[in-house]
Length: 289
Image (cartoon, rainbow, N blue to C red; front, side, top):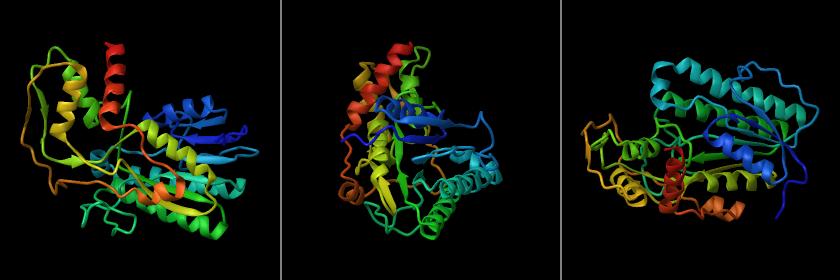
């Protein structure tokens, strides 16, 4: 079903990994897209000037978890105050918001993790995203405009920064100067969702008429070793791999989320298998080599 009808959508964080692909997808589907990213200004103090907006997708945030331990104030300033600035814009425009949060549950007390799982943010980054969620809930209920919060797991896809696990492994696989693929630990398992499936969920959120929070992922987990094997198989590359056996402090060994709520309420489900998503990433990598 076409939901565009020439709707004007503001995408913050439009120059990021998700934002770039999201903007291109929205424009292909007939939406009018306004963009905001860090090159334009500081989102926590920026004065937006729009006559009207039909929806805002708020992606802009500081996201690199290790950095949040060194620069917590910057993360709270951007991720919390920046979100409140966007909420104030929603209030003025009378337009709905789709807010992209993070995995805020910490070490799972049970699997799969559903939306009722206790909140226990594992880093200043995750905590800043949760505080922004609280602001979203308050503004939505107090000023009466719809807000959809997505709590995504690990989103992957083409053109992702090589600081992240999957592109880092792909880079090592294709680099002829690298004899052995190295990772910290082969054992941890995570829930990975392909970027196009996530974008589909974001667009489906435009129909929401109230405040809602959804976990979003594939609903199953993949280990680091399985990722490496999948990448090697998809690329046709035969290369040894090893772990440096550096175990992270308070490592979580397995995480995957319950996606039944988002399936039921948004009629959404992931359609890209992990293996096919990796193949798409490999094809993009091949084109750049």
